[in-house]
Length: 379
Image 1 (cartoon, rainbow, N blue to C red):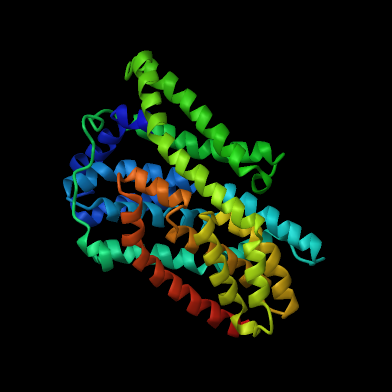
Image 2: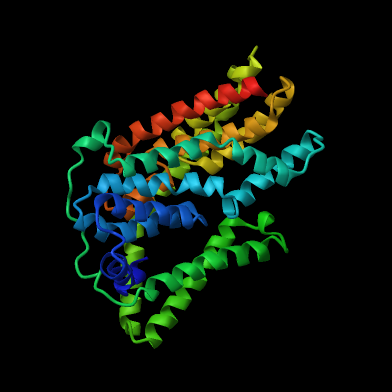
């Protein structure tokens, strides 16, 4: 992202939308562009946040939009969209967990069918996207977001105008390569590929492409490519440390079997009508305290499926509640990777981002809870 910013590609893209096509001309359209980018680039939550933040910064600067509002848009279109469109590492992880539960519990159902049905019940992600859209379209600021003032972004000279293809080609390549590497690591099956390995190989290959492309088009000298690569890596170093400690906290919680303990308390004489919402709340608590939605999925899906079978409830709805809860808790957590990276992408203080985003997340969480009860009654 540092190299793409320095190339002038983002400046060229913004100039094309603002001046040549006159698409972006207001606060609403400036934030809506980041929102649309976040929805389109669903390959990985962190990448989504970084790209939508990088594109959004110069536009938010021009229209005096706060860093907190941009961070909220980046965060609300990262994990939610990645957990809904599961043709990515998220899908690979969830399919593996679902497949294991089908085998362990001797269920006669296709794992892909069960996963797709479960994603339909991912109510938090759906409402998070809807609430974010409404807040952008109608300019709604609630709670601490009302007091979030505009601060100039640290753009300096990195948004000089150049061809927008310096931005678009690496991003297009990035999206395509994720599917290719998911296919390769999954031995011919995209949904069985390794999400983490695919993202790593994608980033490495894209970085090599950027080096070659920028050098031979005389956009940057090899010396500057090295210089800006190191600057980009340096920016991520504090974030890497925060994530390291966050993962450590998550591992401690897992070793203490916090999730299993909470589930055992909740499962005693539980009415099937409230099973999904209880699973949603438990998953939210675990994700918030550990800062990881993926870790929450790994803890809670093996617990939620037997609970659903035990009380003869809808298994797909139970899995959907886990996914929703994992994304909700992760969305609200100050130690979540997507929270931290969204703050980085929009140059916003992490705690300020968490405080301003929380009211919107709680609205989406409340709506999701109501829908889990309604669909439990229907089921």
